[in-house]
Amino acid sequence: MATFVDRVTLHATAGAGGDGCVSIHREKFKPLGGPDGGNGGRGGDIILVVDNDVTTLLDFHHSPHRKATSGRPGYGDWCNGAEGADAILAVPNGTVVKDYLGNTLADLVGEGTTFIAAQGGKGGLGNDALSSSKRRAPGFALKGEPGEERTLILELKSVADIGLIGFPSAGKSSLIASISAARPKIADYPFTTLVPNLGVVQAGETRFTVADVPGLIPGASEGKGLGLEFLRHVERCAALVHVLDCGTLETDRDPVKDFDLIEEELAHYGGLSDRPKIIALNKIDLPDGQAMADMVAPILRERGYEVYPISAATHAGLQELKYAMARIIQESRKSAKKEVKTRIILRPVAVDDSGFKVIANEDGSFSVVGEKPMRFVRQTDFGNPEAVGYLADRLAALGVERELFKKGAKAKDEVRIGLGDDAVIFDWEPSIEAGAELLAGRRGTDRRMDNIESPWAGRYVDEAEAQLSEDEIALQWEYNTVDPTTPRIEGE
Image (cartoon, rainbow, N blue to C red; front, side, top):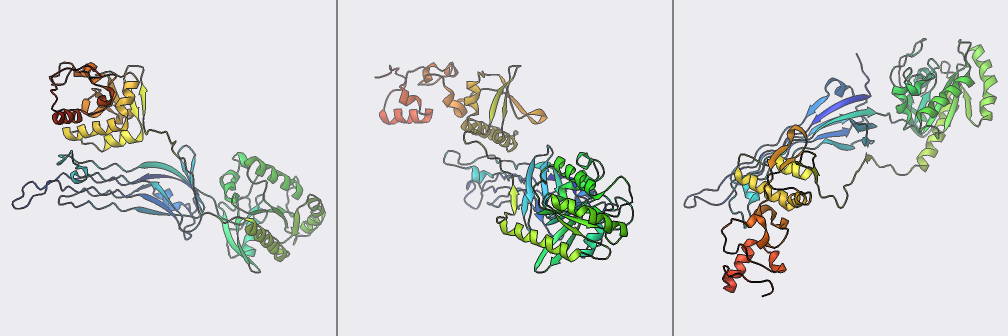
């Protein structure tokens, strides 16, 4: 049974928002006291929180589907619905959040760092919140929005100061067991270490963490062995320690060759070539091991590396190695800038983004795509004609009708809001209430005014008056005592 999991798929479903309430206040001697419908409650979020007590993603491996509770609907007497409870998910320090395409969304480092994996749906407005001077008693309310559903990839990159790398059976597990309280599995066969192990090392006043990475072999950066799975655990390390086996019984291997092969794999993996490196020549407790260390140490020192002959079994040379690692850690911490805990990738929206886009399809129909119009549709109760009219007003205020007019849409053309099976399809009919700004010319020449019995239909108006609404024009005529049935020429 797996006990260490460092890569999982998380299916996060946030809670839906509660529906708004349609209600009219009633009391004695006041049967129609105005709208008093409350708003629906917000749906709960899915939130990832870094917890240092959590060291693996095993919980998500067994339970990949996580949901938050939904908000409650609003009530009469101005009572808002209760909000849904957030689902707080603990993740290890160093968890990287990616979408299903592999794009990094957040890099969670530091105790208490949070990231909203899925946003809860907003609650719908009740008819009290929708009332205005022009809409005194709305007979509708907005529906709550569904919660966000996301499929995310969680990857764990261990947060360690020093990474131990080397061939299988080089003695990395024995070394971390000798210098820390970690107790990894140790045996005399390759690939004994199947998961990274972390240990805390104290050298003087400096305390740091060391990661034991499973053995690397040629081709590890391309997926051979276990290297590709666990090389990411050394990406955060300030320094790397090459543990070279000076007592190997394989005749085709020697420490210098092993070092060159591992360096080649690090170069192919990328991003690790600039790390300070220390070389530990292990197993000098063996007669052949001491002789091999004496032979290869000058070669490696000529290349500019610090070389320390050690024995993880007898603890020979470990004190010098620990203080060498501590010195590098101190220098790294001094030069490092103050670390910002939360690393979240921000993709700001362009300043000229209207929130939607109109697409002219080849079949003569038009598609409206964008978050705002789709949100308006999700909030609309299509069984209520008044709510549908409010949707038309919102789309017109957003500029959807104007953009459809520019794209060449005509009355009765098919318009889809959204994509796929969730799209709302209707026949476009430009309306005066929702799209008066679409008029191509003077009101008197607008074809939509044909066959409408109106006292001011067919009359000419000036440019200033063309910008007024019908109610504003009628109000002017009322105060100016002008007969609206009398046609007048522009400029009179």
